[in-house]
Each structure stands twice: as structure tokens, then as C-alpha cells.
Length: 233
Ligand SMILES: *Cc1c(COP(=O)(O)O)cnc(C)c1O
Picture 1 (cartoon, rainbow, N blue to C red):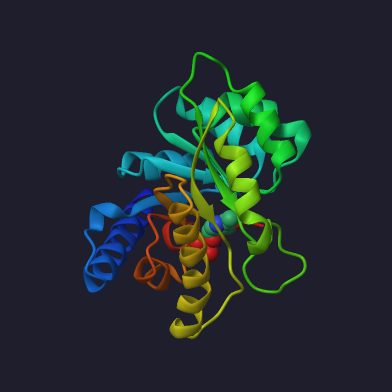
Picture 2: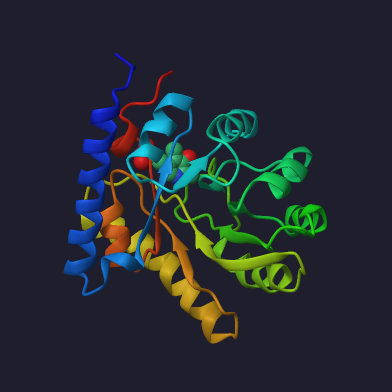
């Protein structure tokens, strides 16, 4: 069963907002410090419309063509769009023209293309660097050791605004182990701030580990299945 119902999306969205508020409060943070991105990859335009109607303002997409179709379907300037998928150089022009944020920049070459291709009529593109946390060789992202050099390179690009770091750590059931991965990203970011970069965003936490991410300082959580239900295959 992969269909959706508007009321179940609204109900699940409310439950996710409650999880965020509880986790923020437990960490001594204001719930408003944590913004929710609904990850709508492989979900229908109708599901996105239902989430938008229920108040969700930020949508994360992994696949360019699919994202463009949903943007066109929803209409201009009705939501904020975050590109969170693997970024290839032949996709940067459309990403620079149509998205508000990119969370998956892991090479200077891609950042330079995005900066060159960001239209002058738009605000600078918000960028997070995707960092490879954990040791799964298949995961994308720059290594923690190479992050500072990349960050300083991106911060110098005129049409990008470097906001912070993003990671997808290895899946863990144990909350303490989840927190340990997120802490690595938070400490890396703290080091960059100490080195003079003005970063305000930690993009970390998904359906299964958003509480641990918020406890370690997440400001953006990217949540798919907890809002939209299982992804259609
Ligand atoms: C799919 C995806 C998510 C959301 O995952 P859920 O477990 O469905 O919440 C978050 N971030 C990225 C980068 C993703 O690809």
C-alpha cells in the first residue's frame, strides 16, 4: 500500500513537529531553532501538495527531474526547495536556477559551477558541505580532514552563501551511538567557526534519529518517511 491520504500526512506532520519540540526542549533549546525539511523524494505531487496545505514550507529532493516537476506543479515561490541528492556537474545549472539550498556540495569544482550559474536576479544560493561521517566507503561527502579547505574555498565564492555542514551518518539504533556521529559533525563545525567562518546551519537528523541530532545541535532536520510514509518503489 503506497497511496497517501491528506489527513494522514497532516497527522504525521503534526507528530514530527511534536517530536522536534520535545527534543529541543529536552536539550534546552527553543523548538523554533530547528527547521523541518520534508523529504519528498519518490513521493507524488499530490503528497507534496497535501504537506504544503498542512503547513510544511521546506521540501528536500534528491532527484533533479522529479523535483522540477513538483516545483512546476506546486507553482512558483510557494515553498523553499532543498537539493539533498548526489550532485553531478551536468545538473548544477538547473540546481543553481531552481533551488534555494543545496546540502550536498562535496567538491570545490561543483561549488564553482553553482556560483557561476546562480542567476544574478536571485539571492545567493545557500550551501551546506556534505561531510562523510562514519566509515561506509559508499557514502558521498568530503572527508572531515578535507572539510576546512573546502569550506574556505566555498566561502570565497560570490554567488554562494556557505551556511554549514550536512551529514548522513551510518544508521544506528542506539541513541548514544547516533549522538556520537552527530557530535563529530557539530565539533567539526565549531572548529570552522573558531577559524572565522560564520556558519549557522547544521543539517542532520532524519526520521529515525532526529532526536539525537537535535540534542547535538541540528538546526535543519531532513525527514521523509515519518511525514510521508514509506516511499513508493
Ligand atoms: C531520503 C533522505 C532523507 C530522509 O530519510 P527518512 O529516513 O525517510 O527520513 C534525509 N536526507 C537525505 C540526504 C536523504 O536522501
